[in-house]
Length: 379
Image (tube, rainbow, N blue to C red; front, side, top):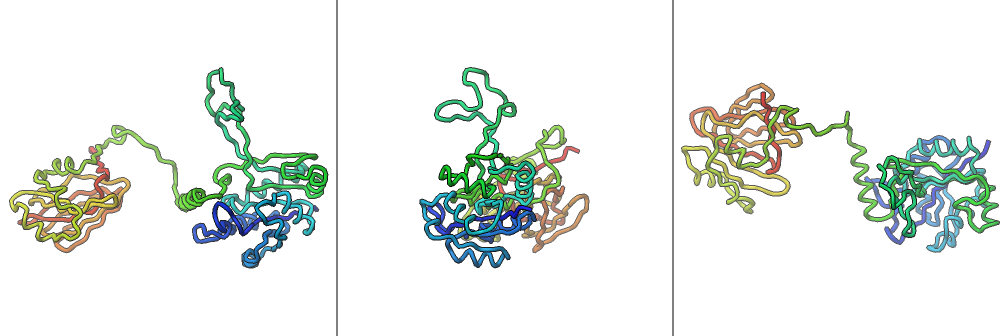
């Protein structure tokens, strides 16, 4: 059996992002992601971090893998991948070296296992990871995978251009040494069999600069989300609903004609009771007191028997504070009475409406956002 070693190169210095391999991504060092994937692949006989910096020995120890300290000459800005890879295989006994970049945090254990398995089964001496670019491509101002004087094809019919992904590379060690001796280079192959392994999805992400770190953080956030099935936009007619967003229009349809929506917005200090004193006592009214990109807060007063229409919000939670009077709140068909001092919370997607009851006007502070869609079922 050939001894297969995973080698993770991790230079401490970095010109674009200082100490990027130690930079925290979702609370973990960037390098820890590829270490975890390598260990979970269960196909590597040993895993080494290859670095000039002793701090990576500490990381290797904490993950129960090995550390190889490369000489300083192999850690300089001028040192090439060929240089530190050759140095490594001259010191570490192995027949196949699999190089795993710490800047590929989304390379999966399955990617690594399939890569190595194919390399072994097909007796490939240099295996290069690539990504498919299936769009019109140019090189040196000349088309690569299309003809400029012909009609453009749908992208799915274009022959993909394969670009290096680099996250994982593999070499049969004796062939690597022979190519280095003969050509002074072995990274891309040379003599011997060369194969290409296509990475897809998040596996092709390479974290190399600040924008890449932002993208990686976003991907981690997305991966944490769970979605049972894909959702698609359907027309209002198909859903048998009406959708309204404009707040003044919504309030007018709810029977509120006196609106001071903007006069008092975003004052550093407001007093609800002082605002109420300035409003008419014999008809419904509204007064917005907060209106920002994050949320809005609107005082709404209605007379007994008045209220809003049955509706829901598909992507926004909403809540109210009852300033005065009594309201009958209907939520998913169940009715409750809420009074002064109560706070009512409605989760997104729940159908609800409210109506003022009792013997005097009722006032509520509605906290939401001005651009939230109100969705009204037609029946």
